[in-house]
Image: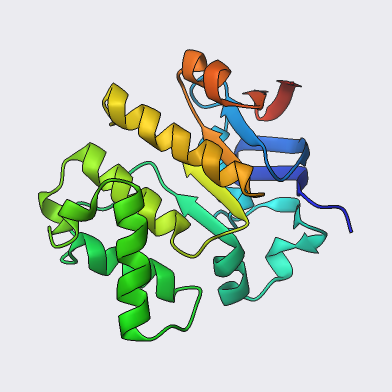
Length: 219
């Protein structure tokens, strides 16, 4: 069984408009940070959501030899962490509760253990002080860091991040990207959409350039 992430023939249409057209990705291996880059409307975010099985598509997404579309939802939630561009600002949850909820989406854990695991992730990301703050009271950058905590709290094999640095100051960008490198170094597959090509060149092992709904180049 080949280890890594493979996407083959991914197509997505929004009404009559094709967004992705038979897109293939090379095998993305454990230990690597891959950045999806390209112009606006190239399909980067749509591809990330299709890989996460959050967007209807045709084609096949295979993780470590297993078709993600055929995997039970809870099993997939344990193996795949997804960080959207933004968290909803109107949530009534406090930050810690939102991370616990993300943990329980993929694992059955007791209340005390869930609290400890969620707090440990928030401390690692430097946001423990936000634990009891309502999501609605957080800045965009703070919500992005909480969203990262939600994505990694289940210790996923595959981590998908959509514009994870867009609302962060430089210091938090470095902290987040350093954490992504560390997570990849532990044997995970990390795929991120980044607009900043200087950041991509500095932190990624591989860049995949999308254009017109297809893979234009990678390396």
